[in-house]
Image (cartoon, rainbow, N blue to C red; front, side):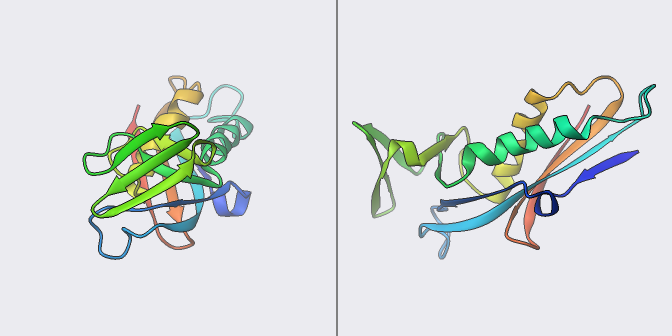
Length: 157
């Protein structure tokens, strides 16, 4: 049995900006309105439920809330330099440089902040928050960067 939670319909969304070094257009600072989606596959437990929807939505919302209205930065980038200077984070790559207030930046443990990498990040975060018991066989997490386009990451359990 599969449970599906649609972030657009549930209001589990966030707005954030990022850039993708090396991409001709997306290397400019730009933003998206994102949604977090979740699919869980498993067998119902004795109470007839595969998993509690409230707990699933709480985990999804946690992911959205930590990135909402932030400048998203890759903490493990090989091409982008991040420097913490006082209350600022200075960013440089190619021949560009930016300075952002630390409070406005969310540094993700990623090489690159793309929808694909954000889906992996969200999957790891959601799995860490949930008790997925022995009845869950697969979890998939999607991150849309606007309606109609996004990326999914999945894990067999």
